Amino acid sequence: MHRDLSIDPKGTEVVKYVYDPWGRILSTTGSLASTLGTHQPFRYRGYVYDVETGFYYLRSRYYNPVWQRFISADVIMKGNLFNYCANCPLLLYDPNGKDFLLSQQFGFLIEKDIVRRSMLEARKKYNAETVHVYTEGEDDYREGKLNVMFYQSGRYINIHIGDSTTVRNEYEMEAIIEVIEQHPAFDSKLYGSHAHMRAQWIAHNTAYDYSTGSQVQKVLISLLARNSVENIKGSSQELDFRPYGNFTKSQLLYYSLIETICCSILDY
Image: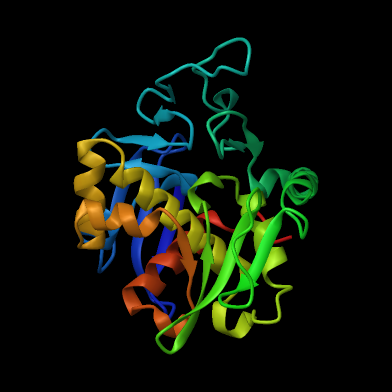
């Protein structure tokens, strides 16, 4: 069996999921099982779970844990195009619906090398030459670059990422964050760890995808965010990194959950 836990800021377990090896949910327990445990979408292996269909979204196609296979073909692999993780769910996982990796407990050394090589590729694409980081009023938008702006919002300074929904690769997110932290205005004590920042990015991309997705996804994200779909779509089109003090407790809990489930791969 596979298990996931959700904890609150005090470290108390509030939701516990139990799955069979293929990701089929066997039980959901805990004090927030009927609320957070139902509405938050990040479940087995960190995949996005669709409550309506029972499928997992792996960033490029859907996986059915009951069928133990994908519902659409892999356009890259040869052989069984619907196969999930070569029929080895205990050893392997698939972060994007295109290629499977060894699970951490079985392939730590191999995965470390994959992370290293993936980060090298990400840094070739996003670096000080291609990412323009500036402070509002001291510089301006530059065409052909990924623009990142520090700006004043009330008593806080937020970090605005232009075209953030076009960046879907967690390695590329990390490379961009590495450039941002070199700016004099950046303070890790205010904005948190890289994993915390990537969690915000993943949450915003997911909110945008759901607000522009199927009717079921729109209803789900509206209930989860307690806001209209149009407002969610508008606010999630481009990302703002905010200091810790500029979050509600529920937002911090949500980001901590994503950080725990989805953002451990780069902790090397």
